[in-house]
Image (cartoon, rainbow, N blue to C red; front, side, top):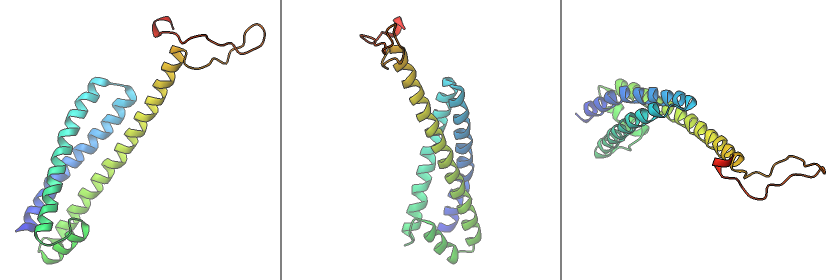
Length: 155
């Protein structure tokens, strides 16, 4: 009976993981285009999917532990060896694992994109506020120095 419940949870999570992957890919594009409205919408959808996937993941782990198995691939394999649904459990479990791994990969790429944009924005702000010592030369051939940083309104 637990094998059917576990398979059902895995089956339910596959489309959710696919939706999460699509949202992460859309997030990458929205970040590139700096579409803040779309990003807010994606974030709300993404958070609800993550919560749902976490809940189902905990439930799957609990089911395996209740049967005296480890809450990982080895536990799933042990259950599959005892169940008539064994091949389906492993195949669908592998599919879900791959989808979640793809989500992690895209999420890491999105994170790198965010970091690059933060560095570029910080650099632009530093230039606008005069935080960098200019590399310009004055009439005597020495490096020109600003006496104090400028406010953004004066940039």
